[in-house]
Image 1 (tube, rainbow, N blue to C red):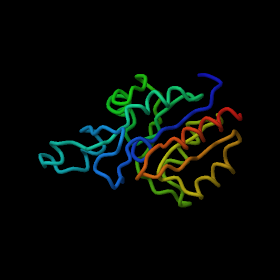
Image 2: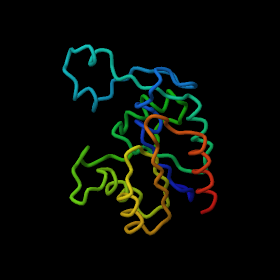
Image 3: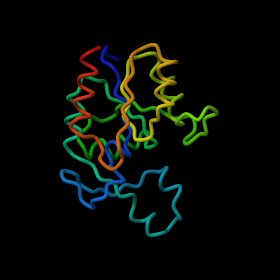
Image 4: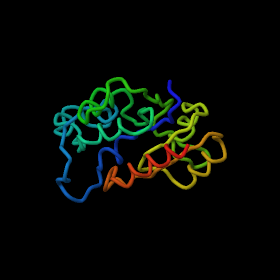
Length: 177
């Protein structure tokens, strides 16, 4: 563990702009992966099951993320498979820490995004930035009220993924700590 803040990374949205309107995004490469969570929701033997999930990733993002003043960790439904599939495709170091969700897509009694409470528990009072496409204002207010350390919740549009301005925001926030 370091004294650097955590950067909690979601895959789908920030790294894989799954809602992009263009079939080919500049700087991105398409991959076919077979993550267990996705496979479990497909019909066995179907074309989708055989072909795998199409994921577009920007290979420069790994270098950019490693260069940020953060300790990186996965905050994604891909869990450990992010280290096996996504990380190598963009050049991230092997075996980044992973938040292991107690229950995927659990309904929160207060309407929070299902990741918010387990993520706060995992962060254990450390400063963190969280990049995800599903963060809401309700989640931001909850983190402000229940997390004593600094936190940046950065909602990334799933049509665009991480952009230059997001890297700038993350850098400035970490350096201001």
